[in-house]
Amino acid sequence: MSGWRAFGDWGSTRLRLWQICDRLVQDRTTGAGIVGLSTAPADALREALAGWIEHDGPPQRITLIGMAGARGGLAEAPYANCPLDAATWARHARRIDLDGIQVLVGAGCAARVPGGVFDEIMRGEETQVFGALALEPALALGKHIFALPGTHSKWVTTNNGAISAIRTFISGELFALLQNSSLLSEKQAWAGDDFDAGFDSGLIRACAEGSLAACLFSVRAAQVRHNHPSGFAAGYLSGLIIGAEVNEMIQVTRTSDAMQDGPLNLIGGQELVAYYARACEKYGLVTNVRDGDLCVLAGLEILDAHHR
Image 1 (cartoon, rainbow, N blue to C red):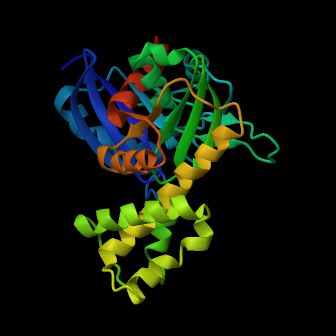
Image 2: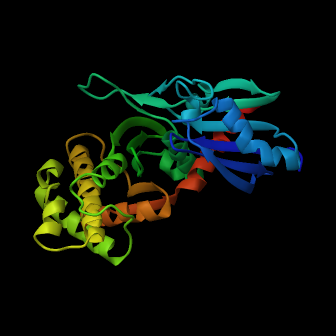
């Protein structure tokens, strides 16, 4: 297969690669994340691409976003300042050569926080936002809010197609830390009806309480006093954390100029986004769910155009 391109989203915990030919995905593969690599990033990328190169020859070019552009990544691409539109973001990309193949590494973006000492930053999520804008051009008009759930959930405000504000919640990381703490009596993978029932109860408590710190210990009480199983307790913990995140963003939009035109745009993997949609519904928010892979691929196409 001649003339194929490699697209990649290289995060802290994993590398996702797509083989693209004629703007269509031909194959996909994964590799190790940037954090904790046992080899140099360039060698890790070579290893991840080796199967495709052996079968189809080298790619025409490679386009990467995410932690590939971080300090200690494949090649540092400094943060671009907000307000930031897609064309300006793409111009901040870093170009390098890897074994004779041109590699374009996307920049992250940074937004000043009113009254804050430090900026809000992100790498990778901006690609999904710009991809969503490309897939639905109407979103490039007016003010819109995008929620991108994950280890470090991002809430991104756009104004006429440019990213203007970022807010980060470490919800996924907090859940991972607390599920290995004394709050939960058993350590296991949770799913199913118990988890979902617990999640809904956690949302109710988060909605009534308004303070995450004040109600976290109730996860323990649910097990000790009410004999709820660990699956319920884990779901309850997730509901508290996600509910508190959504509630805080509602307060932010009410006390700032961040009111959006249209529904909240949720971008990400199907399972996690579904829980965020349930939380938003609890708070009366209308949501528009968008597939994370489709958005990131559309954003990578924008960046890839700057190879030429």
